[in-house]
Length: 459
Ligand SMILES: Cc1ncc(COP(=O)(O)O)c(C=O)c1O
Image (cartoon, rainbow, N blue to C red; front, side):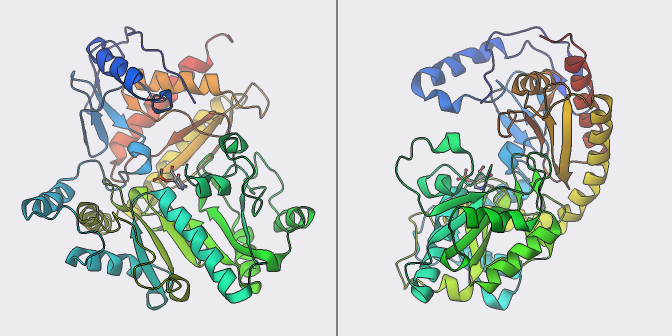
């Protein structure tokens, strides 16, 4: 994870319609806040560019000292409908005024509206149901549990493997990390997870073999038979790229799962709710997952997640036995309803697709100026990533990625810290309502930052 220096530096002032930088960065007056956190929190929480968020509205983030950034983070792909939308705030305020701040799994009316609305977005509304939870990891855990319960009940204990992909990220709880594909993140899990198996992801850059044969061959080599697999779990695109499956691969995977009664699980925690220019990422491939895991952009704000799944699978647990304390908590539920409304009313899915037509060619042009250092550009809609590499290789260069990220921050363009397998990927994910003019301005800032950093003499 990137480390950011907390010594304030002079940066040229910026004053445009969308961006404003008028202090040293980090802001000297903000340092006591960082220091207090450094003392009271684990360092794991301190990996982002040093800004103290005071207010976030639409596609902009503001601090308390008069600085304002165009946001390319959406938090972390949360604020799909935009930060702090007044429609979402009003809906939350109405519930606050009632008041109804919690209800456990006693029924409240808005919960019924939300499960209906999400069911309507599923591949076949008559055949799917919706279970509401709070975080992406929690929903992933639930999907794994459902896939394995289905396999156990229908086929017995030998159908037990959960197959997922190298470089996958599904969260930080135990089951979600066992299903993840980053070995370094799993060192703490000693002696568990023999039934969690990862295979290469067909991204085309880190792994050039994008054939489905590699999936089959890897399982065979690992001694895993198709009839022993309970579920296959994949992100709709892998966050580290973003890396997409080839369509043909996704369809072969679906047929493989159908042929062996394996639950096909798509993790839509990042990809869902319009990000890629379709409502869900799986729609890009023309497949129908059995279980769809949602989070982040579902509410554009408060913590909410969901598993949308085939009715037979969702019915496995009797009343009272598949719940969570904050399932369908009233405030996140109304936030999600209002966010869905905004996405629909403002045509944000289509807008994201169209903005992708501006973003991706522009990023390719930036890469074209530095083909030795910018390994590849991947993306669809309003999610994209550029891999920064050591000159002329595919070896990740996280330090240069961090410097470009910091240069953007100094110019009033906010990105979260670089991601990727080694922190080499500059990830771009603005709120979906960003207008074309602000998107163009932010792309040119990004281009300038790349130019400045990549034309410095090598360190
Ligand atoms: C694809 C994917 N799945 C699951 C998760 C976990 O979600 P949460 O952090 O809400 O537990 C994340 C979070 O980054 C994610 O990107």
